[in-house]
Length: 198
Image 1 (cartoon, rainbow, N blue to C red):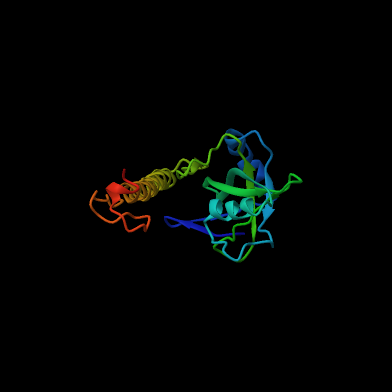
Image 2 (image 1 turned 135 degrees about the vertical axis):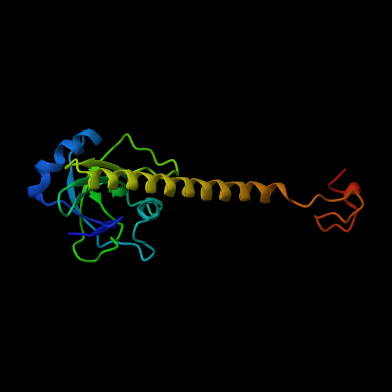
């Protein structure tokens, strides 16, 4: 079981006997079949916990397979909340799904994964989904706080992405303009206006 602490709640990988509890929620996410995946031994030396998209892209560039998006399913240890967290795994050329992302907790390296071909990796953070199994005030408050937390993380991630894209654009726009009477950049020794600037 992997512990995934969020806002004071401990989430674990559901066991096989928990499938009847989480199955209706999984069917709302995707019509694909769920699978228990172990973290693969073929981990990249650069693989980082919680960086599934980059970890999978490393293997895709090495021609080991393609990206498969989907959801990791988590169950609150007291069985009050189910959480679906967007995740990326490698689909090898034999069709096998391989989780190449080390988990932050080294105890059990198994996840419950459900592929979702409707998800798109457009560089934006995909918000987690939640289902209350108990409609208590604590549970509903937790879900509301968790959704707000996810939305804030998404906004910060989008802002970082926007800033990195704009800095690349600004860099290309800030090339030094060459004056007509300056030496040509080709190294001929002639003035720019009599050489490449003609």
